[in-house]
Image (cartoon, rainbow, N blue to C red; front, side, top):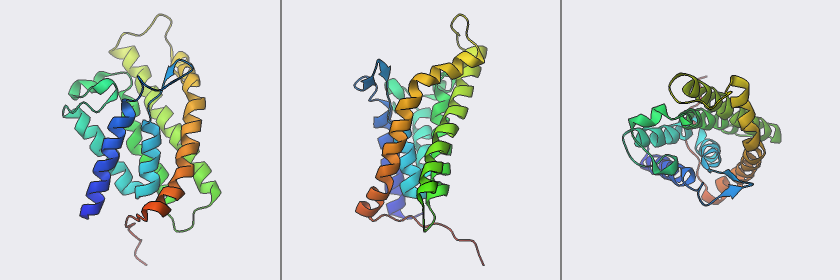
Length: 190
């Protein structure tokens, strides 16, 4: 791995830490917002699947070893027990999926739309299922909690996540051009 790639992966891990902790300052309609999905999509779109997921993995590792990079400036191995920890895990897969779809030489609008839809789907499937299992098995679930309730909670976040995803995908080609950063993508042997 090149030093430039290590630096940019570290930068995205740092951006995730900032994005995780903007919620006290950024609320839309009473819903606290983090910018983690934005930075996970940007990591995949700009760095490609390998480096994007590596950057998100670095963020996860930093938090687990105790750096206060998760939401509400939390960190440590105990974070695994948080009902929302599944979303943190999902960012690795979000970056990978977005990167895979956008690291081709010619990328069409269909690739961008697919990348955005898959980013949200991956984020919600991993995160919401983790939340459900955490609240069911080791955390205290609210009265009347069910699998359907866990998914219905996501309805409040969906419009915001769609907006964040669209913004991220509009920014990817502009940032690629402005930064002139092209990670090496391993080509299949002929």
